[in-house]
Length: 167
Picture 1 (tube, one colour):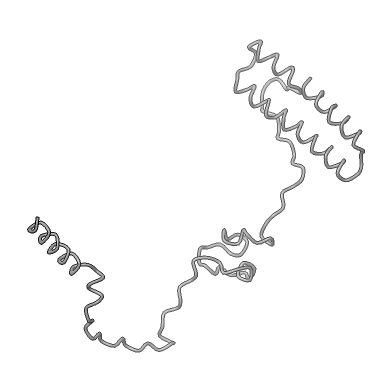
Picture 2: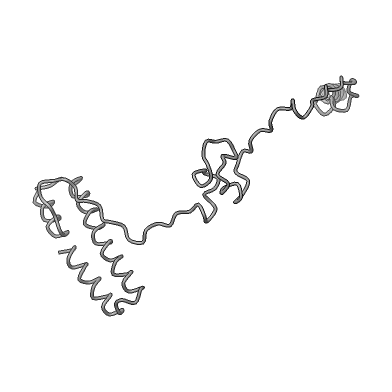
């Protein structure tokens, strides 16, 4: 037991002597003084990793050297001047190019069950019809919020839109 303790003590002493912390405690040799560099000969400072703030995101310069200037720089997307507002109402997508044009879900479901169209074709048309419906509902919602129609007119309009696209 005593021999094991002594071996462990010796191993710990060797490990501590070889550790980086022990190397730092040793007195350093006198280093040669660095040559003086005049300001004219000094290398230019490296560009920062990120744009530094709102002033650097609006100065017309690529401050961080990533090839993007101001609001096109990813670092400047957090500032309000660089955020583009999305449109309130988007145009509905064009219908998929196919031989038959569907205007409501009832026709579409009928052709799917009859085997006239495949699942992927049904899915594309379903997405298109839903986008048309949502665009019209968004317009009705915008009219209601702007005060151009009453709540009763809004509900009636949304119901008419639903019937139009559900068939």
